[in-house]
Image 1 (cartoon, rainbow, N blue to C red):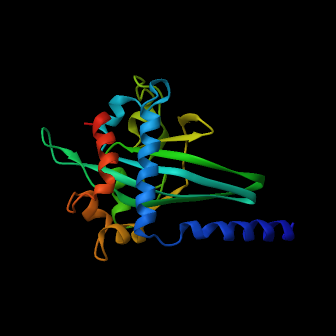
Image 2: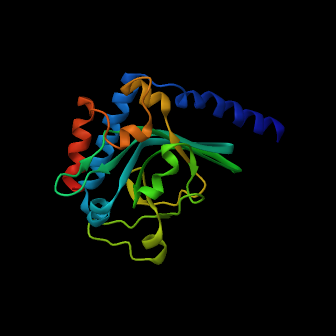
Length: 228
């Protein structure tokens, strides 16, 4: 058992550098991957996020290709972006992307690996409040629920109606609501600095106080298309 645990921890240790550091080229790749994930999901009506949820969302986080690896000890980790609604109608728009990370873990007799795309729909700014200054645990400081699926579906259950975050996953082509209770969501400061400069922080970015980088234009165009 000790050998198996050691082996699992070593393999996870080799994987964790994925979370270390960021360069501008890493940021650009992440934005493009997030754009592709969002576009592919919303362009498939029968397995999409309901339009009314997108149109009422305060923030949307996209974590493309979140990795899950398990060998006795399991781990989930990924990097992505988040954008938030700024301003009021009729001039309201979406902020430039801030960079985020998500991680979590599990323990059990398991082995294998998979890449999963994640989308988190924040129903209000309170659901993202902790993110602006520190990391928070989904389901702890912010209530979360698996989101309903389908272009015209509605958040019908009491849990979904009162959840601050609705979460979705896509793995092997299957898109569905998913529970992420216990996962840790936090800013990726290295990513923000690499894209915007040394003094930048998530709050400034998500409040629209910086110029949107040209590399994010396609992403914001896609978000605006479905979430005016």
